[in-house]
Length: 125
Image (cartoon, rainbow, N blue to C red; front, side, top):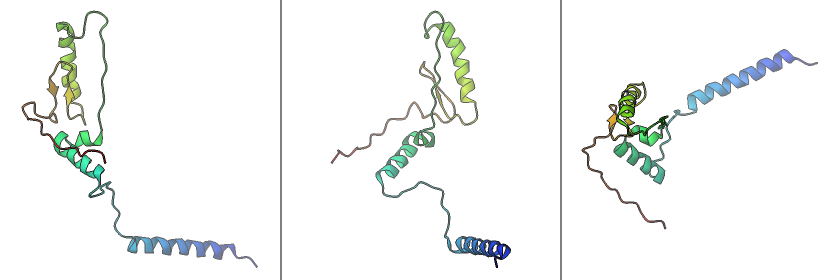
């Protein structure tokens, strides 16, 4: 004689026991991509230290614009574009905006006075 209710309850108990055991003895969950000692981790750390966390994450965007007449270096175009760059720098999540005219806007921009620090790249083996 078949007893589907007992089978369903048994499966439920088995899944419950597996879940409890997994939670109790499964260890600690980790949500990082750190692989200490690997070349990629060294590169990520170097990027974070020298260029900031945003550069290491690759979170960048490019804004492309053009003009109908004249050139992008005309004074009138600069007067229009510069306030836009400042507005973009104030957006949430934007650390730094580099203007095509050489200025940077935002609190996360690297200092223009800072000397670049070279680091050795090992030759390919």
